[in-house]
Image (cartoon, rainbow, N blue to C red; front, side):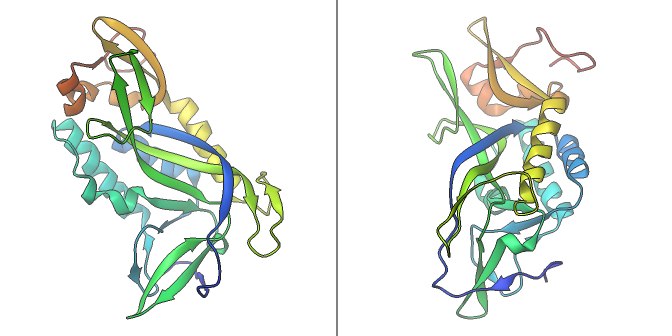
Length: 244
């Protein structure tokens, strides 16, 4: 059952229209993800990518953190995470209010949870490396893409489905999830660093963020090992254990 009640809608309501998305991609340790949750304070997690039973679909924070911890433990153990085990959780949304979501009833006591107004949207994040131009690219989805934690996204423009009026998504009472996303950005700035990759003896600093507690194990990442890529020991921030 939901800890907050979602309104029920019908099939005439259209999904949210939004644009100019801001994104924050990170790979952090399980302890760091728990720290992020503590920093965010009160918020809710809902599944929006799959059909769920009626009055279900909310994810307890403890359950999400347990699943994320399992994902990190696989990387630490040199295993490529099975995306099927994490897809639902990593395609969820964070929201400060249930008023920005609604439930769409389906047959057989099932439902879909849909987005009515801006929420923080999650997705699995992967990066790709091209030896042709020696560049790393965020949001790569090829078969050789490197699993790299989560991406949080939030729009800057939103169109009301009823009035069709377009709003700037500001930090005010109308858009409470703006503050939630800004807190994610603040935590990321303070607790992660641009990733210093080392490939062919050349250091490449990329904007994809890496948690400070990941430096002790990140070179066990199986997809980095496969490609001969390391995270350099050079210029690490203070008080961070060097990679093995």
